[in-house]
Image (tube, rainbow, N blue to C red):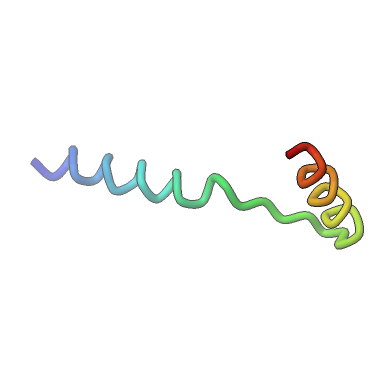
Length: 40
């Protein structure tokens, strides 16, 4: 009974962190943001 809840909790946790990336260079990060905003 505990195993499905554990798998569900781990799955939700991994999905929550999957969208965050660290880009160490702030200028490069801003360039990526600018390119993405020009596409729309």
